[in-house]
Image (cartoon, rainbow over all chains, first blue to last red; front, top):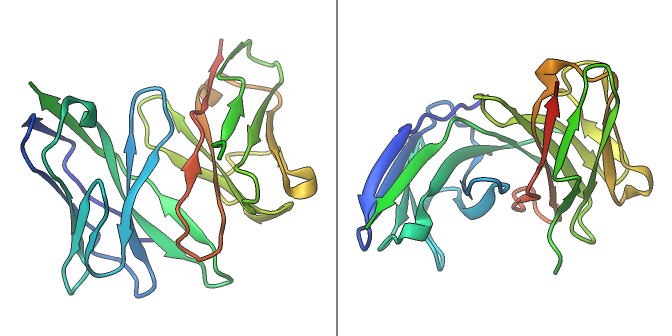
Amino acid sequence: LAKTTQPISMDSYEGQEVNITCSHNNIATNDYITWYQQFPSQGPRFIIQGYKTKVTNEVASLFIPADRKSSTLSLPRVSLSDTAVYYCLVGIRRVSGGYNKLIFGAGTRLAVHP
Amino acid sequence: EAGVTQFPSHSVIEKGQTVTLRCDPISGHDNLYWYRRVMGKEIKFLLHFVKESKQDESGMPNNRFLAERTGGTYSTLKVQPAELEDSGVYFCASSSGVTYNSPLHFGNGTRLTVT
């Protein structure tokens, strides 16, 4: 199974861009990369996902190089409310059907300071 | 649309007792997942339903845990008898499954404390 490695923690200041890089050396051809955000006492919340190159939505961008062995979540102009744990996950496409399985790692604890 | 709801939000029971956790997925979501985080550890997969069928239960720790999803709607996770190491936060998630990478929508979890 593809495992992910990401920094345990990061610090930033309001208004800065934050980039969190995740490595997933054993990612398989059909696997995809997905990122979730979690606040205390809440469940993880989907942020963004991609298979290759670059994906952008209203809250973040995801950069995936050609070899797909790593990915970078980019949060533009963070605010205090972005303080949370961010999980990089590899979604494993099941051979038996069109269903996925997410394997959580330890996540990156991001602290945004005033 | 209403999100994934879990009940209760907190439960404190004594070792040896039984507890049943409930999850109501987003309406129309065929896929339902149970995850848990025990103290200081990572969030671990427990099992996955597709409608009322168990697709993957490889993460269930032992036979004290029983998950059901009768009728393919809400799901229950029963722990009987509970042990101290079962303490943790149990998360439920659902997805539409329209595509294999349909995002999971998580509930806020049930915090279980076994004393």
